[in-house]
Length: 158
Ligand SMILES: CC(C)(COP(=O)(O)OP(=O)(O)OC[C@H]1O[C@@H](n2cnc3c(N)ncnc32)[C@H](O)[C@@H]1OP(=O)(O)O)[C@@H](O)C(=O)NCCC(=O)NCCS
Image 1 (cartoon, helix red, strand yellow):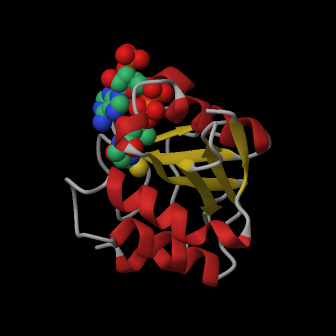
Image 2 (cartoon, helix red, strand yellow):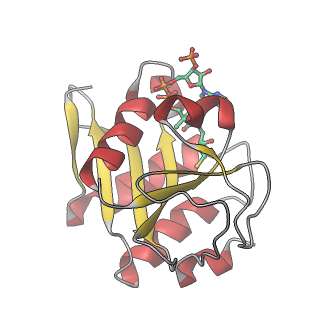
């Protein structure tokens, strides 16, 4: 990997390809790529970072989108690394870069605590459609109770 950078307009297809490959074994085919495309169309991609390989190819992606919450908050979703490039620190670099880019915001993620706890995420019992053991948050405001709402594009995910 040569580095991380914000997405450019020409990257949309390559980002979708990374998402489709990374999520090929889980969920509805194409759902994560459709989510990112819809967030982009809605103006809800607060941050979209790509990881770029030595040859200029895009091998990873992370997105932040706005959350309605009683404090400044963003959703980190999805994060994906092209399967042949997994296990080399790219996913961790993407998550860390997203958190570093928005230090004033609490960031919420839905995912495997074994992966996300290393970045400071801890489970939160907040009220939202994804409530459960995989809902985690990190940042300046992590109260015991809160109601949060994801950007409209997430409603299509089911
Ligand atoms: C999750 C993902 C982004 C991690 O990217 P990566 O570049 O492989 O991650 P890194 O190399 O930085 O870190 C690898 C570590 O994450 C762990 N890890 C990866 N996926 C994991 C998972 N689903 N559950 C638990 N741990 C996981 C690995 O075991 C490894 O742990 P170690 O450091 O203790 O050996 C990548 O595996 C991926 O794209 N997965 C498919 C899509 C997905 O599930 N995205 C997350 C939900 S939005």
